Image (cartoon, rainbow, N blue to C red; front, side):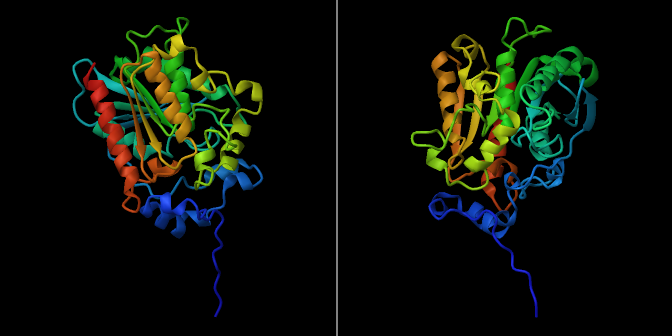
Length: 338
């Protein structure tokens, strides 16, 4: 009798197990630990063909799905079922995660369609160009163009209300969303917005690319966390931001934006995993937004949650479903206030 024994490629560190959500521990030990971390392999674009984080539910049914071209890439728009409000649909521009290296407009369709259905808005998922082939600031340029497209074409193509635009994203996508919120308040931004952005929904965002796991570093507390380890995050950063001089530029690390710009950004909801290495910089960014005068900033930390919980909303790990529900409620309320 012969059998193949599976060897853990990313076992849980003993120190972190008691702190993790028990459902996540079970899922990680049953499935995730056997997946080879991509940063340990030679770079090959084919690595992008691997499935996204397991544990997600299927995307929700929406009224319509359409793709639109940008100059160098494309976007996917999800429109709700039913009749649009008299002024048109509110619109949520969304950026997927994946360390600026992985992901696409299909990889987080579950989250996008949940926002579409549950916040009753058009969701536009941006297929921004990826590193290491396209490094900083290419992804930012695609993010800016996505907002410009909505301002120029959103009403005609999608019946969007361009006075009700929110931005958001997860991880590296949260980074791009926060940066886009800053770009939109620059006097030089064209075309001019008819009214300021109404909301930024940032999920486990990257806000400070100078963070480390060294003594006193923002990553130190959770340096033994699963999935997004310091080694993996540094690999992503090397792909996208190989020049250290770029790390403190605000269109790479929004926490370094001038105070007068941060103060003009919209209200924010920031969802974080308690055991994510990015938690510290997410909390710090939210606190900074509060300090400079952004009126409403809600920081929600999900107890026992590591970085990938947003993509894990199935029955195996209920914490992800809670995050998605909370995000949809926050987005819906933001649109209702306008």
